[in-house]
Each structure stands twice: as structure tokens, then as C-alpha cells.
Length: 357
Ligand SMILES: *[C@@H]1O[C@H](CO)[C@@H](O)[C@H](O)[C@H]1NC(C)=O
Ligand SMILES: *[C@@H]1O[C@H](CO)[C@@H](O)[C@H](O)[C@H]1NC(C)=O
Ligand SMILES: *[C@@H]1O[C@H](CO)[C@@H](O)[C@H](O)[C@H]1NC(C)=O
Image (cartoon, protein in one colour):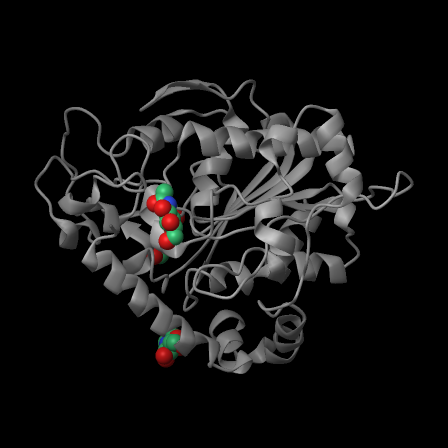
């Protein structure tokens, strides 16, 4: 059962997003670029509409490779999810890889490509943009790491070893298949914290025992872009009734800590005086991740929005920017995009970041 409060929140997000979708492209881009850049911004927007009908799944050529090299058990092509559960691969042996391949890691309840529904636009917008700018399917890769894409199951998904191994093996498979010197990683929401852990690798405790991800992969990552991640937790998870759910729990969830048990949900959104805390301050998974300084790429960017309905109050958690990656080299804050828009409507910026490094 999903708690009433969260359920209402999702209903509310649904309504909010309907509001956003009916907003004209002009308004959206005035917010981001300022009115001056409107013309070019608008044409970029039209090229990267979130509902671009990009279809996978992985090409038979890549699936063949996955079967031959021992990856079949993961079913990265997600036959259960149809053409929107995965994307990428060469068409023939003769396809040449000119650009460093991009691996997209989606967030909770989302998937590789867009389907109908809330929080399910995947990376269709970005993939469409890259395809329109000279990339091929041999250079763009996405799979779906969740068991399903059911929004009502959102609270059941934490940073479990199962999800981590799945994403890790996908990154390894793309590196091996493409033979590329580097890949770029573009991650959204829960994909950011999964992705950072997967690239850092290592062995660390989880609820079900040690999770061993292997050697660090940061030396193979060119640009890592983290969009609307919750690197130091989510205020929603500070509610006592939420910590029982995998997505919010104190071990592998987005528990933001309770600032030495003096706070309640409301206070999480506000800057707190520095308190000296005994014991873990927030989720063990997140704290371990943030204390691990293993690099995650040659150039790291953080992107978030001040009006993200999942990360309210400008994305502040006890006064810290939760979407700010500790490894970051640069960050961009959008004034008025929703949690999904900050992924779907920044495809041009993601492209620039990947191309400019
Ligand atoms: C931000 O977006 C919302 C929803 O589209 C809109 O109602 C609001 O006026 C916008 N705020 C600003 C400051 O542009
Ligand atoms: C996910 O949702 C489906 C459909 O509502 C349900 O049958 C299934 O048990 C859920 N899975 C989990 C892990 O809660
Ligand atoms: C945190 O976000 C605020 C905007 O909310 C920004 O002014 C500030 O520079 C950010 N700080 C860091 C360290 O990212």
C-alpha cells in the first residue's frame, strides 16, 4: 500500500504536469533563456519535444553480442516492455562509432523511452536531440532498470544491490561492445545516485549483505551529467511514516536524516543551524557514496530546477542543494521547470556539455 499522503502528492503531480504541458513553448523558454534568445530556443524546443516517438528496443546486433558475452540473464532489451524499454546498438558490423557513446540512466518509475503517464517520459527527448545532431543508435544507449514502470510502485524501489548490478553490467556491456575509450553518462533523478555508485564501484554493505560492484569505472567516463538527483536525500523521506519504504529508508533509500532527531518534515526544507550529530546523519547508502571521493568522470555537471515538485523548496535539504553532485565541475539551475521538464527540455544543454568536453 502506498501511503495516502504520497498518493495525493502523485495525483497532485499529475495535475501539475497537465498544467505544464498546456503551457506554450514560448513561456517555458522565456523562463530558461530569457526573452532575447527566444527564437533559437523555440526551434530547439520543437526539435526536442518530450513526446518524440523514439522507439527501441536494442538492435538485434547488440542483443546478439549480449547473448554471446554472458549478459543474457539481464535482458537489457526488456522484451517485457516492448519498444520503449530500451534503445541502442549497431545495425550491422560495419557501423562506425565516431562519438563517445552516451548512456542514459532514468529515474524511479521511469524507463528508457517515453510512454504515456506521469514520470514516464524516459530519455526520448535527449535521444531525439542527439539523433538530430549526428549521433546514431550505435552511440546512444538506454535500458530500464526497474522491475516495471508502475508509478504506484515507486516507494518499493531503493538503491538495492539488484538495481545497482543491473546498471553496472549495462555500462560494462556498452563499453565492451563499442570498444570506446570513453562513454558519457546522462542520469536523471534516482538514476543520478545509482549512476554515481555504479561508476565509483567498490564493495559496500546493503541491507541484504555486501554488494560488490567491481573496479571503479571513472577512468572510462568522459562527461557525467546529473539532472535533478537527490544526492543528500529527499525531504519527502524525512516523514517518519515514510522511512519504512525502500525508496525512503535509512539504509538504501533517500532518507535525508532528521538533523539529530530535532526536526519534522516541514523543517527539512529550511536551512538549519549546524548541529553536531552522533551516528549517521542521512541514508547510509548516500552518506557512503558522498564520503567516497573516487572520480566519476573527466567532467561532471549538475543540473536542477528551483520549481522541481519532487525536490521542493529549490531542491534544498536542510539548506544544502541535494542535486549538487560533490564531484561537480559546473552546475546550472533552471528557474521554473518541473522534475521531468528539467530532463526533457534541457536536451540541447546536455548535448553542449557532452560536445564541449
Ligand atoms: C512557472 O510555471 C508555472 C506552471 O507553468 C506558471 O504557472 C508560473 O507562472 C511560472 N512562474 C514564473 C515565475 O514564470
Ligand atoms: C507493482 O504494481 C503491480 C500492479 O499494480 C502489482 O501487481 C505489483 O505487485 C507491484 N509490485 C510491487 C513490488 O509492489
Ligand atoms: C545552491 O543553490 C542556490 C540557489 O538555490 C545557489 O544560489 C547556490 O550557489 C547553490 N550552492 C551550491 C554550492 O551549489
